[in-house]
Length: 373
Image 1: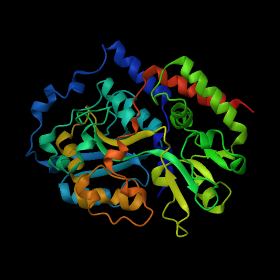
Image 2: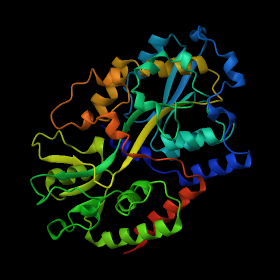
Image 3: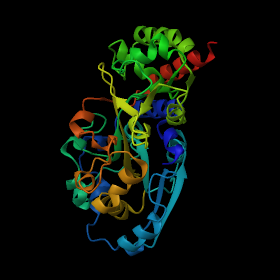
């Protein structure tokens, strides 16, 4: 699994805020967000000659098979499939919002960023008649709060955040975010937290009983104080190597995204727990750009990804659950793997949504926490 995956959910506070402001200036959410048929939709042809179309995809490195361009071209009979990479959501947003035609047909972005792109009218509505493999999705995958009914995005992977820990080194199983924020003496300076803005705040937000999407200044101020109180007791802020720290014993508990908690390590002593106060539900999605001149091919590509034999690759190679029941039914789940978390359990998490201009509050929060000695 590529470590660049970790940065895929890095916030693009400035970019997302700019999108929301632009949308507001244009009168709010685009008409396409309602799921209605756009004027362009009438031009989409289920039996279009895809050999006259080509595809340009932007995705995180290591998030799809390396042979995807060749295989998709062969299967779809399109003239060309080109895959370009982005390291972060922020980088993807820069590509997609720079003005004019980005040349991108299909983009992989996290759910709240898909929401922001749609708010500015940059996304083509999803036309289900062109993606029959949507039927492979879990019913729960159509009820994601940022895009109920998959009107402008199709989920690719999903998961949650919790506490990853060494069962042989902790004196008590962690069950609360306070076990990270206020670690017992035996865990002092043996705990890590993440620095990505929304995930830096998440443990404190949930410990205090707040929404992961709160915009209230008084709540964010209390979150800030709790995080500052926790900082002296941390080993480090770590978004990338916490699994290695657990394996070596340098850390005993860490805040982690589920797919990167190394529960399948051969020693079988690393476990994952969603704290009792609850957590988030993150989703990475596929969207079609309204500027695409290859919309039928773009829909065909998403349909291809949703084929169980293709989509299962993500679960088997990057260890993240896919919201595709037909694909997950084909995955062999090894002992200790978190791939067995059920969709209903995931939906207990609170979906992260685009906060528009309020995203800058989390940017400032992270900067202030990092600046404190």
